[in-house]
Structure formats: C-alpha cells, structure tokens
Image 1 (cartoon, rainbow, N blue to C red):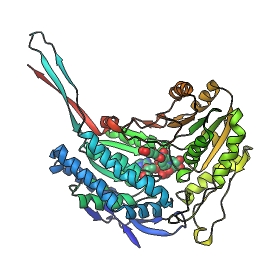
Image 2: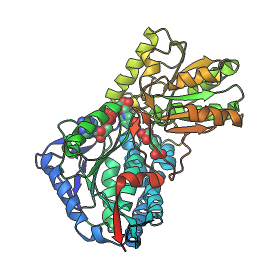
Image 3: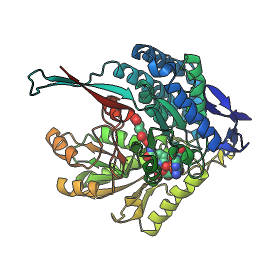
Image 4: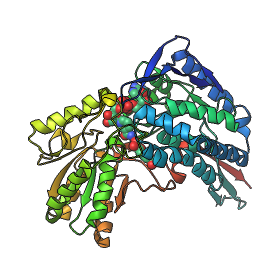
Length: 486
Ligand SMILES: NC(=O)C1=CN([C@@H]2O[C@H](COP(=O)(O)OP(=O)(O)OC[C@H]3O[C@@H](n4cnc5c(N)ncnc54)[C@H](O)[C@@H]3O)[C@@H](O)[C@H]2O)C=CC1
Ligand SMILES: O=C(O)/C=C/C=C(\O)C(=O)O
C-alpha cells in the first residue's frame, strides 16, 4: 500500500498522532494509498518552516535565480509526466486523455508562465511638487506577502493547486498547501519535484487532511500565515473567511457557480454542440466553469436538444487507461449521492428526462465505482433547485428563450457569477450581450479557452478577487511606497 506523507521543510513526515485516512479510487472503490493526516503539530511545523524559508536564502534570492528554479519545477513535472498522469487519474478516475491534455501540462505551465511574467513587471513612480520647490520622488516596490495558505479542491487537483502555487512562488512567497482529502497524490509528487529542482526547504510544504477540525481549519486559522487562497464551495469560502477575519489576512477566493450557456439561433450549431458537450460533460461535469444551464433560442431548441442528447449518449465510460474512454466517475460515493439527489429532485419537479437520470450499468471490475449517467433535462421551471443550485455533476437543463433581454435576465438570475458561454455568429450581438452578463468570465463561441495572462475569478457569490496575469500580483505581493524628499 502506498503511503502519502506530509511534506514539511523539505522532508516527508508522518503525523505525530499516527492518524491516517484512505485515498480511494472512485472508479472502482479500491483503496490506493494510506494518507497521513496532519494535526495541529504538523500544521504548526509547516507554517514555521515556511516562515523560516522567508528569512533564509529564498527571501533574498535574485528574481532571475528564482525564475530559473521555477522553470526547473515546470521541467521536472514534464519529465515525470506519466507518473503525474497516473497519480491524478487514480485519485479522480478521470480519463488519461483529459489528465494528459489539461491537468498535467497546465500544472507545469502554471510555473513557467508566472516565472516569465514576474520578471517583467514594472511598478509605478510619481514625482511630486513641494512648497520648497525641490520636490519629492515616490516609487513603489513590490514585496512578497509572506506565507500563503493554499487550500485546493479535488476536481483539477494539480492544475488548480499550481495555479496558486506558481504565482505565489514567482512573487517570492512560501506556501503551505492543503490538498483536498480526496486527491492527495499530485501535491505530494510535486514535493519530490521541488526537492529535485533545488527549491529551498520550507518554501513548499504540504499538509494532508480534511476541512473543519482538521488540517484545513488549523491552517486557515493559523496566526503565522499572511494570506489564504482557496478554490471550492461557496459555503466553505464563508467558513474560511471567518477564520481569516480573526488574523486579518487577505483572501483570494474562487467559489462555486451555476454557469449558463446561451445559444442564439444564428450560432454555428456544430461548434455550439462541440463546446457545450465539453462545458457540460468534461471531467464528468466537475469543473467550476462548467455549464449546468443551457438557454437556446426557440427556433434552434429542438435540434439542439436532439444533438446534445446524441452527444451525451456517445460518451464512453470506463477505466482511465483505456484510450477510448472519455468519461470517468464522479469523485466519491458521497458526491455521487449529492448528484443523484438532484436527479431525484428533477424527477419530482416534473422534468422531461432527455437522457440519463440514473446510475449506469458498469462491468464487474467497476461496479463499486461512483458512476452516474450523463443527464439532460428540459421542462423545469427556473425556480427548481436543479436550475438554481450548483450540482457539480455531468448534467444540464435546457430551456428555450425568445429575446436577448429575456435571456440576459435568466442568466443573471442567480446568486452566482462565475462563467458563461455565448454562441452566436453575430458579432454585434456578442459584444452587446457578453458585458451584460454578471460573470467574471464570458466566452464567445468557445469554452475553457484559457490565456493565463487574463483576469480569472467570479462575481457575486462566485469569488473574491482576480488571479491570473498581473492581477494575481495584488494578492501574492504587497506594494510599499517609498517617498524621497529631494
Ligand atoms: N472549483 C470549484 O468551484 C469547486 C466546487 N466544489 C463544490 O463543492 C462541493 C463539495 O466539494 P468539497 O471538496 O467538499 O469542497 P469544499 O469546498 O468543502 O473543499 C475544498 C477544500 O477546502 C477544504 N475545506 C473544507 N472545509 C474547510 C474549512 N472549514 N476550513 C478550511 N478548509 C476547508 C477541503 O478539505 C478541501 O481541501 C462540490 O459538490 C461542488 O459543488 C468542489 C470542488 C471545486
Ligand atoms: O484555471 C483554470 O484554467 C481552470 C479553472 C477551473 C476551475 O477553477 C475549477 O474547475 O474549479
């Protein structure tokens, strides 16, 4: 049985309590590793190691030197590509094709892109007049914030964790990472890469465990941290924000969503179907940017529903290593229960089940896995919980609309505001509609097309702050103004 340990001050360590928990492959229910749960002691040690690192060579390292090390980390991930793919697929059950095209290359790119970016960032400078006529000169210097607590989710484990660790380290911070209890593997593998690349001890630390009364809470309540970056559920965001308020540390949050796709009758239907297939079903619907509400202009409605149904029914479920497989299980039995409870609500609310709606028949070797059917509904009212709440599963509700004004109001009628996709060949309409949608990210004629230099984050209850490109610098560094009287 594999042992997954905490990583503190450059060393893999057990937990003093001796407490462990199981890492389960959701495709077949097999226990694949025993994970050592960090208690308060390990979290204290990790935060102390990170603070010590800030006072060691890392804290004074030249930017160019730091960037070389981060490039080595990116190279190190790519050099162990197959191991990372296997670890990610075993933890999540996701198909190899997905992990090898999205999760792992993006995991490496997150180091490279932010290393490239940070070395070219200017700061501002202002000359001011003074009564004596000599003036004064102001200039800002950018400093690391200190120790950043990174609390990561399970849906894109390496990608979303490094999306935070990359810019944090590029800005010169040290980090303590708390990966999701469901997916402890790749954060631990990355620790080996950090050592191989020569990242100084204490700069990257990993503590394993759960949220409340476990490593997550111990870390986010810790007085030795200087900022918290979190991706996950909005409710967890509230709990973490309360913890952050006690030590008055800044937070950067990327939270849940109930994202819409809007398909106008003039859309290129082939492209709209291809994009909506990805936005609804990629990663078994477990992408925070994913679509769970689809609004289709009435003349195209029937054809769109028919073609999305055909697409959903052509998805191929199975074991991650099978080259033909493009659809995995959800992350856990617990999450499956949550998704299936919404399938039940849809039934009770009188949905027309276009396809799916239950649990698929799987071969004997996968029968203990957390499988659910890709599902499409029509006919629900906008007030159904299925249309209002984040399900985070492979499913969507499709409704017709008749005018731009109507669809804008439908899309915005939610407490969330993360992402949207608009499908139209009419450029004026695209420019008119996209800015009116209350979301942090709006794609036109695409979905999940990501330029890492652009601002990323959610409006309303979908997040606080923006990461990506120079925008993350606001969180991962602090500006000090220096005023020199001439
Ligand atoms: N990217 C996103 O927007 C994601 C959304 N979700 C949503 O969240 C739901 C539940 O999934 P979970 O993994 O349970 O999400 P979660 O928000 O509970 O957990 C995410 C991370 O936060 C940690 N955590 C939980 N409670 C905490 C606390 N009080 N203090 C500090 N850390 C804490 C967890 O251990 C994990 O590392 C999903 O069904 C889905 O709806 C889940 C993952 C990603
Ligand atoms: O940074 C990205 O490109 C991907 C983001 C996806 C999420 O944040 C998510 O699914 O939680």
